[in-house]
Amino acid sequence: MQDDLVSTMDRWDQRLKGTIRIGANAAIAVGRAIPGRRLVGRLLPPGWTSALKVFERRISSVQIEITTYCNLKCSGCIRTIKDAEGNWQNRHLSVEDFSRLVTSLPRTDRLHLYGIGEPTMHPKLIELVSFAVASKKFKKISLTSNGLARSVDFYRSMFSAGVSMLSLSVDSLDAQIASQVRAGTDVIRLVDRLKELCSEFPGKIEITTVLGRHNIRTASELFAELDRLGPLRINIQPYDDLGNPGGCLSVEERAWFIHEIPTLARRFRNLVLSGDHLLPSLERCTAPWFAPYISVDGYVTPCGRLTDPKVINFGNVLSSDFHHTWFGSDAEKWREQFVRESPNECAGCPMHISRICPRA
Image (cartoon, rainbow, N blue to C red; front, side):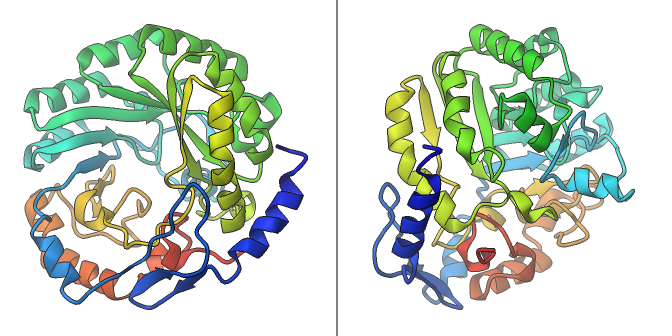
């Protein structure tokens, strides 16, 4: 895999040239499709926004940032970048504000407790989970963690309180690479933690791997380690440029990796490898209709990538109820503009082709 990377990338670069054309109102696929992933573009017809209004009162998930504290310094994280500049403030969402927030939310399929921070560092996490469960508003409650901030006993308490799924962030189990992408990672401790949690909570653990320049060549080695832990789903996401673009993969590199997934899946039978978000979608993103993000300060933004309320927000759910914030006039105007043309704040989003960064 590693030896063939450069030559394979060149072949994919040639194959993809002329394949994708971007229009102002739609993304249209022309030419060849990438093996393993159909590139189906959809021209958005007039009235698309109106059609979505039929469904807009039924959001599918809610993501809440409960803390901005973290025990690691990931290279592509906006927290790491701003903290180095002296422009970051650590804070927790209070139990009282979390309770008010959950009370104002509609019923939905999933509550995900995660933002720009390590959620297990919230001192009242178990209490927050218990309140969310008692509200009976969510079919599933999940969170993403680096697995290193708390003891195994804490994770046991978390599952007992009602957490349905824990996604562990693992980009590499090589100490040198881990120090580059997730500074502060104790790899030996992380391996032990993975073994304990996967053994004790089968079916409730999945892995999130951010794929970038630092670890694409050793991804197969990581998967080999994870394959020994038993059945696991691996959600592979592209490294995102939030101010440190050196780790970003080109579209061609991501396309090549997707092409390799079937081969990797045959090698690692215990793993379900999902690269659904590696390539940007040719269809219009629906997150601003169905997947709100709520910051630690209560600001509601269109999705889990646009986490900075200074860039975009629809209002604050702690000073106004969720319905008036998410379905208000400001949100509607933004969505209407989003359908017509991808807004500037979506620039660089690795999952939205209308704003994909050009290859360096």
